[in-house]
Each structure stands twice: as structure tokens, then as C-alpha cells.
Length: 202
Image (cartoon, rainbow, N blue to C red; front, top):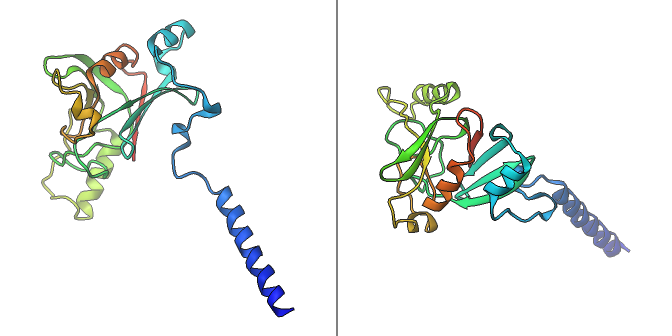
């Protein structure tokens, strides 16, 4: 009888553990998870134009751990793109010269054709939150007191013929987000200056 009790007690513990795990939220930001298993849009520019979707309604989510850029509308991933960053570290940018990609919410402050990288979409780093984190890092002794916060972070392409840098996820930038040239050309026509939310996270 005692063994039966032990058996059922162990079974209950296992079942409770299973159901508790089932209720845990996903480690992944739900913004990256495709709802209703909807497929990505191949001709996303045409889709956006046909639907009359405005630039301010679009969200660009950059996931550093996945090395992916997600183009989203109404919680749906319209399309995803591989990206390359500036470091193998996923840490948040703290100062100029650390080659890290900043995290947080940003806007595009300017965009233009680039002689080397096809297009450059310049995000408004550092924001007030970026500056707060920079000063806190100094206070905590994580960076030198004379460190500068840096800037000129953007989304851009690669030197012609070097898409492999993105395909292979090679960390080659100074903290910017790099895409294949065809991908950055597509996004350049979709992302709005001062309107499209650019969210960067681990």
C-alpha cells in the first residue's frame, strides 16, 4: 500500500510540473511568433501598397539573438530578413567603439543612398533612454568615465558582392544592422522617416 502511495505521489508531481511548464510564457517575444501560421509575403512592397498600409503602422523588430529583422503589421510578421551585426556579443551598446548594437525603441531620422552600402537608414541613437543607460554604466564602473556614447547607428547593406557577410552572420559592422543589398533596397521603400517604429532587442 505504501508503494502505491509513493507511486501516485510521484505521478502527481510529474503532472503538476508538466501543466505548470505548459503555462509558462514563451522565452521568445510573442511579437516574433507568427499568428495563425500565416505565411510570409514574398512581394511585401506590393502587399503593403495594395492594402494601403501606412509606414507609421509598420513595426520593424530586430532580434539580435536570432540575427533576424522582422517586418510586422498588426502583430503579423509580413516578412523576415537575415542580418549581420558588429559583435558576437549580444550585450546592449554602452559606448562608442564597442561595436555593439543598441537596444530599445528608435525611429529613422534620415535615410539615403550610400556609396558603399547601397542604402543607409540612420536611427535616432542615442535616445534619452540610451543616454540614461550610458551614464548608469559609468556610475557602475562598467565603462571608463571619459567614454563617449557614440552614434551614427543605422540599417544598411553591404559592399556590392558581399551578401555572404549577412548570410553567414559575420559580425563586421561597428554596431549597425546590415542586410543583403536586395533586402535593404526593399525595406528602404517601406520604412518611413520619423514614423516606423524600430525595436531592437536580444
